Length: 395
Image 1 (cartoon, one colour):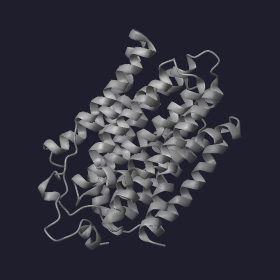
Image 2 (cartoon, one colour):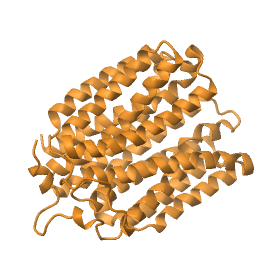
Image 3 (cartoon, one colour):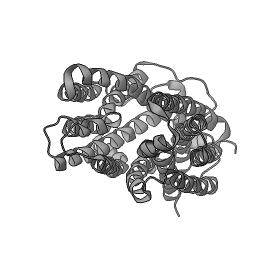
């Protein structure tokens, strides 16, 4: 098996488990968990905030650890953390212990992505790196797409579901240890990346896209619930098609190679905006709402793939850090965007709020990747192909 296929398949599974099961499945089972443990709205909100904080801390720590301990160790640790968190959810006897387990499980998402970028840079030939990175990134969608059917099939048996998810995560930990290189994701420079104009453009694009995405990620269920006759099964179906549509993000690398970062970026920002309007405007029929959800999912994962490629190219010798900058900024944008959308929803209604956030998505296209790399110290020396430093790094 080629390095690209071996690392791509392992990374796809790891991202699917950490994002789809360890992070997003909790929301699908929340009504049943609340009924059993009596979380209440206040504690549910604290859990959500803690999960975000855990993600932000974990992705920074993961980039740092990957550059020092290597992709294999950190990716394996991500799967183990996911397994421990989900086992904790399955066994939690009380709301406070459940909250700790949910935050632990959710933090695995921050741990998982940077080592995969480093593994690809270390072992996959440069011509296949963008395609492999974006295929791995699309694992998020596979995980999200599976949560809906699992929730429906188990009919509220959330402890059983999370116990099964924990077992899958242990399998992925073993696979990551066997399949991934031990090479580090850096050249020894360390430290926070230089925030020059090119990096600030990446941050601006990621922040606005992340903020705009909360119209669907945070409020999609609430928006469709406002429609007459739209029940909880319809909301679960919407989530499944969002996840299924996102699998198209696996082709982000191929599209970038053919059309360039800027053209793909702007095109899918437009599609994400259109999908959000279809889901939340209140004008579309149910089939069009589901089509809009699939379009949103495809565009969102495609855009995260674009930012992954953008960040890794910007920091050619520090791929884990390049990914961290973009993905952390998306999460910060989502944190700011969610309360802002909620306030707009109360003040001007669904149509005005969704339209405003679609416009924010389009504004992200004002930021251009350009052709230049960012930090001079991150450039490979003349004549050395990208990834050489990682291949030569000590194990």
